[in-house]
Image (cartoon, rainbow, N blue to C red; front, side):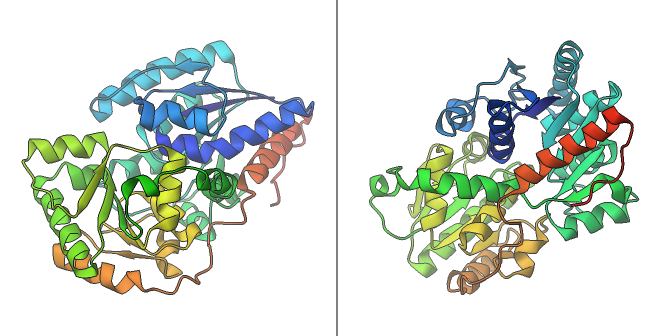
Length: 374
C-alpha cells in the first residue's frame, strides 16, 4: 500500500508530521506500507519550510515543485500540473492532504481526476465566510474526497449538512494534538525566550489575506495591539510573516515600540513561545488550536472562526479588527481560568487515520469493503 503525502505550507508539515511518523514506524516494523512526500513549495523560505523537516526529524520530500508565490490561480494551476505528473509516475494507492490551502485543493483535484482515492485530514471545518479563500478550498476538497477525517463531531455535522455520505466521515481527533504532545518536550530545550530578555508577554501572529491585504484593517489591528499592550503593561512578541511585513512597509503603517518584531521562528521556538505566553492574539486557525491544547487564552483577530470548539470551551474569543474590541477581548481573556477541556482528541489521531485507511483499502483489495467503525 502506497501513500502520497502532499504538503506545501508550514501548518501542513506540522499537522502531517505525526502521520508521516506513524507510516515510518509501520514500515520500519515490516508492515507492507510505503509512502512518499510531495512538497508543492507554497512555503519556501528556510524558517517557513526546511527547518521543520530538520527539527522534527522528518524525511525530505521526494519531490518539490517549487511553485513559490503568485495569485491563487497561478499557484493552484502550477500545482495541478506538477502534482498530476508526479502522481501518474508514482501511482500511489491513496493521496492525503491536510487543511485548507491552495496546495490542498490542487492535490485533491489532481488526485480525484486521476481516479485516485483522496483522504482529507482535518475535514469539515467551516467558517461560513466565503470571502476567505481557505473556506472555498476546504469545501471543494471535502466534496471530492473519499475519506474525510473530521477532528470533532462539530466538523462531522458540517459535512452531513452538506450532503456528504456518513460512511465517508470518520471522527478521529486532530493531528495537531499528536504534534503538540510529541514536540513539546523537544521545545523545552530551545533557548528562545531568554534571548528576548522578557519574562511575560503577549504573543501575536497575523497573516490572513482578509487582514493583511486590507490596509485599513491591518492598521486597525496594529492599533488594537498597541492599546492592549499599554493597558496590560506587557510587550507584544510578534514573529512577522513575510507577507505581513511587506504589507506593513508598503502601506507605511507605523508600529508601536511595544511590539517586539521577530523574523519567522522555527516550530519548536514558536511552540515554546506559545506555551509561555500570557495571552495569544492570532488570525491563524492552527494557533487557535495549539493555544487551546496548551491552555493559553486566545483572542482571534477575525470576525469568524472554523474552530468554534475553542470558543465553546472558553479558550478563545473573536475580536474582529476594531481597536476597542481587541482591547476589551484581551482584557477579558488574559485572566481566564485555564481549566477548559481540550476538544480536539487524545493525541492518537494519526494512528486512527492510518488504521482506517489500511483496513478500508484491504477490504477493497479483498472485495469486502464496508463502513469502518471508529
